Image (cartoon, rainbow, N blue to C red; front, side, top):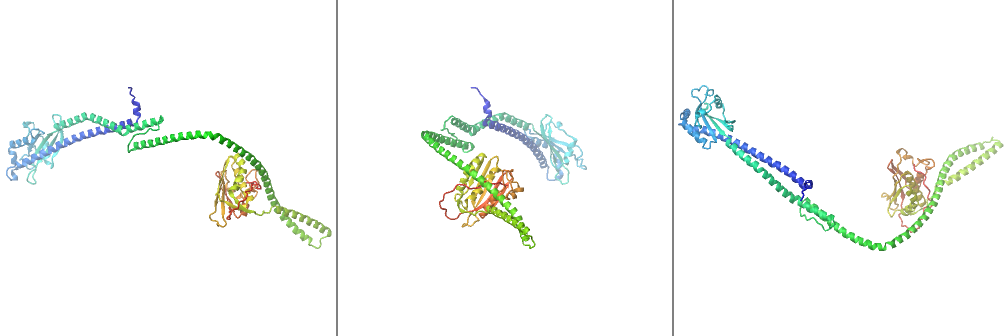
Length: 572
């Protein structure tokens, strides 16, 4: 069987195993080294403590060997060196851990200098050959210390050991020490024990690490690999089409959650598969009757096409009539302006003419000419009055008008224009919105505003008409708030205040007369409301106005088609 470790190395099991094994190995080795080093330090500290305790014991034993109870006889203890020497050998012991104990005394003739500047005299030693005892001049300096001194030294055989100096204090206060104890504690035995322990640690460490690897492998296999393998195999069976495949992982951890979610997904897929088969069966049954329904739909479509052709013809007629209405509106505005501009000077001329005719010194020939001028002025005045009569505000014909049928009828007129400009129209109005208005003038309002919005969106967009009840109005005399919003280029702030002025327009010459928005505001005001415009350049324009609602019961009346609505004029 060919082994391929590369896929295993890419697996999550391998990554976690290698990472955890590396960390565990480093920690185990570090713990072993630290433990070994601590053992060595503890052995060294124990040897030092043993040497200090041995020196203190020797000093106390010498005090006990003082004859009698007279402190003046304390130097007599050194009179019997053999007794001291036997005691030293006894304290050193047969194992020779304390391999050398030396006792020195202060020279008796050095009382003036307290014996601290001369050479000490060797009294006894645990060595059999006292000639090997090193007596140096520096020993006297340790008599000046109040505490024992311990030094870690290298012995003659190359091993390390502790050398401790302990002054033998005098029982008499104020007197110098009577002698000095020097103890050598060999570290060779402890070094051997430490090296044996270190060797045993290095020998067992690989097996410990190997055992950790085995335990880690088994734990990762149980905790991670086995559940992942079960989930993966279930996924492969599901991929091959076995919708009954499930991951049998009963765990309370993340892998158990994944397995549970997979089982839920598999159950959903199984149900979806059953539903799909049921749906296919239903589709096959529906195919038998589909042809009949298609034929019925084709017949209905042909009827709709015929209705659409009739609607297009009606739309063409209405557009022609609306064009005439626009021209009449422009003529009416021009007539009003003309009547105003001509009527004022005519009145002034007529006044001065009457003053001339009232003078008595006017010749008959002149009076005849003045009468002729007066007759012509009256004729011009009659013409001006007739023109003003044409521009008078028409009487409102208020009637209950449902909003939705009105807008739907107008929308049929707008459909070709909206489609050609890639503009989508939306109506957001309550079903019970009923206005008490002049229907013809309402048609004129909405046509003006929608066509203005179309002109503002040359590259397409959206027109939305939003309607809501005015909560501040009297329920007996309700009003409705209207907002017609487009997504065009908007109106610059510097000209926003001029858009309701007659004859003001931003369109090119021949594209508008500047009367559309003034007519809209005038109609709204005639119905007791007012109109305003909100615009953000680059984002669009919103025209806001209010109209009266109908509070009484609505009788069933036929909805007339929008035939007399005037075409829009222009938006500023």
